[in-house]
Length: 529
Image (cartoon, rainbow, N blue to C red; front, side, top):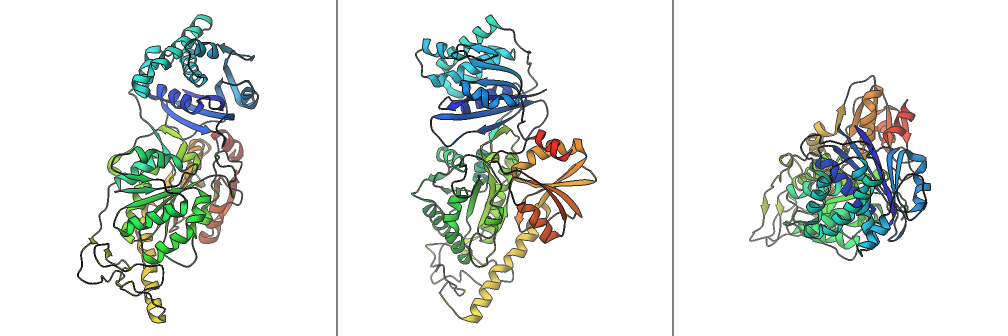
């Protein structure tokens, strides 16, 4: 079974919640689910869509065309009709061809605000698929607890109306044990927590904000919203100086403001993790739409040279693993690390199997007591020095310094300290070499991709006879050994393709997309076929 459902309406209609509720029903019935959220940067009006794909096989993406479209506003139908390959369920307050349900009337009868039409849409949808209403009621109670009663009554009325006036399109049965829905933001957050995250600082910026929203409620972590992205990165650095595992998150525009402090963390050898969730740029661009345009930017985020780790997760499960990996790497090698993700991965939701044991905190020795100044930057063969924090006597600043952290402009000391820091690049490269990229399938030709674009690539590659190499680590960059490749990414200039061409001498053909929407399997079949 493979169904693609689009629930659509205006901002304020509860479309996002309706998509998640729909996904919960099918996940509870044992199906694999992927939920893609599309919305404008407005509070009311406009157009929002939640695309829910249900399958009996593992999926990592939504599809382009829908078997069912649910319309909560009439103008939305005109926008989505080109992608419709099945039926329409609509609020019968307006005229449309399809299955009319008096959602507005039902909500008015219960004296509830119009946002409750999303509950009515779930009731009608469940009847359309012949799902027993008991399953719907259980889902609402699990989601809303004692507050679920009004949702259940409204959904039940829409369900009964459908059953009296129409016939179910099919009868969906249980497909096994229930599955758990996980968002990219939750996976990344929990990965950091498993690796010992204690403090998270962020100024809200779509699409990184869901990480902040989740961690604010997460026990065991202090999450704080300061007045700006500059404050967020500065507080992250400050907490790390105090010996606390800390991270910050933002999108491209906020990351631009953080660059000076990232350089400071580089020269002072402070371990910080930055979540950079890409969106369509430059500047404000399209604030709520996805893209992969920041790769070249984050590889060189500050002036000067210093060790840096940049990596990009390709799935929700990998987001969990990689967030933990990078936090551990930052502390082990005392250097900044950047988790480069995007709106499509962070805000999408799917049935995911998170292996909690795959990420654990890797402790390092920390000196927190001393009678005299600690040789914080002691020159070692590896380049990694002792990590010391107050109340030990530690000198830290953004200038070049000697082994005690005291400012210097001595040529010989500068040469030795810079060499010490840069030695860590080779150690990091050696450690991540086995996981720098992952390979899937067998085939004569290879598709290379990165980040969330993997989801659509994974689905079509095997059937078209391609093998897949998905790049995880961008810095250090360890490319697969290939003569030629098709590179699929969501930007205009082919940023990963350029890296493969220049650093690995691979002959590349690019398939690119830059309209703010992620690739779908249908689009890739057309362009690869």
